[in-house]
Image (cartoon, rainbow, N blue to C red; front, side, top):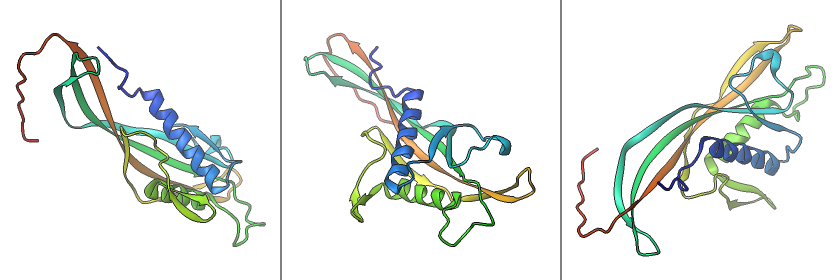
Length: 194
């Protein structure tokens, strides 16, 4: 069984973290960090941090198989399926009400910009000219859509009101398994409606 085209969980997590880090860098927020965390508590929030995690995974459609000829002339049975990954992204930046001005960057600003890059998948750092750029490299992964930004309100230990903005986006991941086969004389294909 050849699993070299199967995308491992940690590999996809690394890809998402790298994509978010690259987006922050392109936006000029190099001092922000990206952390994988599942719904951090309010007390554990770190300043200028983007949090992400996988909320759910599910198979999409059906799993199909078909014979595939290798470069060496042999045959493999290729089994393909698609997974839908729901990724939640949130950001936190402490606010100082005394020093807030109209030019102060908030966590809501960062989340809105990240959502724009996830949706647009373009590089805006090239001299102000938008260039096609894929933050999610590979023909086996695609961003499908993102949800609306949610502004979750909370109260800090000192009694200040603050926001914890977040949004979700869907990735579709193509998974493949290959199994070497003996000699094939005939190929029979069967199709079914989904």
